[in-house]
Image 1 (spheres, rainbow, N blue to C red):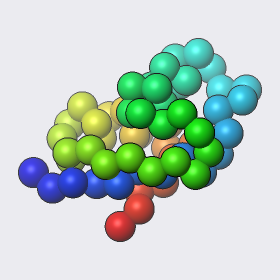
Image 2: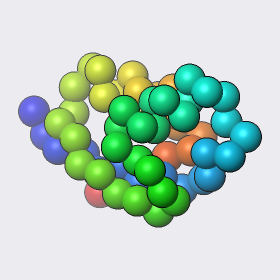
Image 3: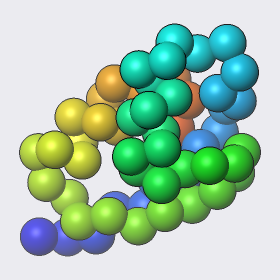
Image 4: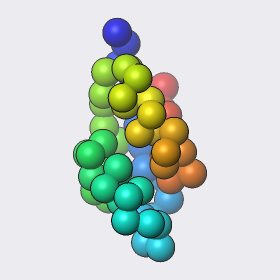
Length: 58
């Protein structure tokens, strides 16, 4: 499995509660924060759920 970097690019203010929980589960607490995760189905599903708030950084 490869490692992907995920960056939060938009604010969580105004987002539904389930999307805020998804950001917390990914480890994204602040704007412009970058975290690394293994690329698997669970992580890609979480990224897809909040794709308007995050960006995959290479």
